[in-house]
Length: 469
Ligand code: GUN
Ligand code: ZN
Image 1 (cartoon, rainbow, N blue to C red):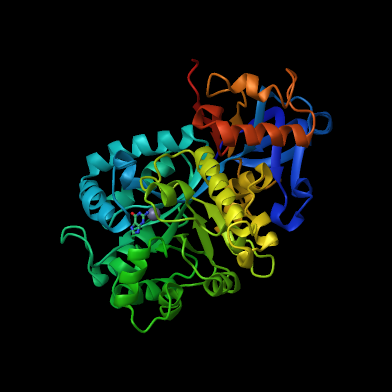
Image 2: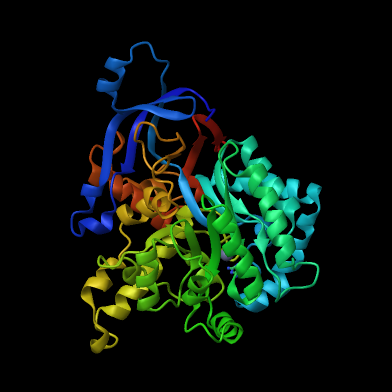
């Protein structure tokens, strides 16, 4: 991989393990270095540790000091839609109406290379301003939008996953693509982009409502012929959608079995939402090594429902999880805001399961697993997301050898009252302990937004610096 060289001194926070495996002692999953040094060569982490130790073994480095910031691995968005950049936050409808009335016609514009290129500027600028350095993105059923997406990501040297969207029903005729054309174009795009630079390819059946058996079979064929590729889709997002999917697939007892039937559920498979998945379906996800992208901004914005976070994190059947903005179903790019909404969803689930609503549904362990501490939240946005995408060997924390994507968070930025709020947790000198840093991080996710992202670095190069203001 090509990339930049740099040596960054500052306060670092990352994860070595899943905090849900350390209930009551989540800090054991994290690593905090109050004064650290990160050495990057050719876009990869070459050395990392306390400043005194690393600088002693690497004399003569030109060091960039970023005081007053918490440095974290770049955020990973497991589910986002490139062609919805201009229509995020559309008023009024639930999923199926929203797609027909607010989305498909906008996506059609991405058949035009100039429009798609202009959109890509806005898309990647907004992603980086939110601290997101990797995303798994939907494009459209037009190969042009997929080409533009990969080419623009490559210009920025970003690690991305994407692919042509398969949809052969439930959309205007100009939007659908036949299974044969989808297969042919997907193969061409895989050969042209997969593992070129940091681009990775996802075979992308949009969702069961929009994909016939023939389309799903073509996806299976593509996966068999290109087993190294990812699979990206939607599942069990909205009750009307689920009912419609059941009508289309009467032989499938539930939504997950549509993907099982077509040989898709397995490692490197991610489905967005999963709001209404049963416990049994989650167990099958866990066993298959498949992942769910938890998209709380979207699940609330489109009125889809409350994802059962604590159930997905059942220690006997844990499901790999990322967080996703699902922009434009989600009304922001910012994963900080996604974490805020995820926290609120977790709190609602916690209330439902604590026995005070229905004593017979009390499940205190599952209730607790819904509590999104800053450890759990930022794990999902970094190492957890990488793990869900089978990228944790190259992304997600500051281990030497990994790709050097990171963000500098300013805990005092954002709302006017933020600095005073944060001063309850820490003095002017910044965090000295992991606990203090975690309090600042919780302050960012509870009260902050993308204004707390001061800088975003991709493969050792700074691609975003917040304007002074
Ligand atoms: N299901 C199928 N397509 C979409 C989409 O574009 N957004 C969301 N949120 N769900 C979908
Ligand atoms: Zn989506």
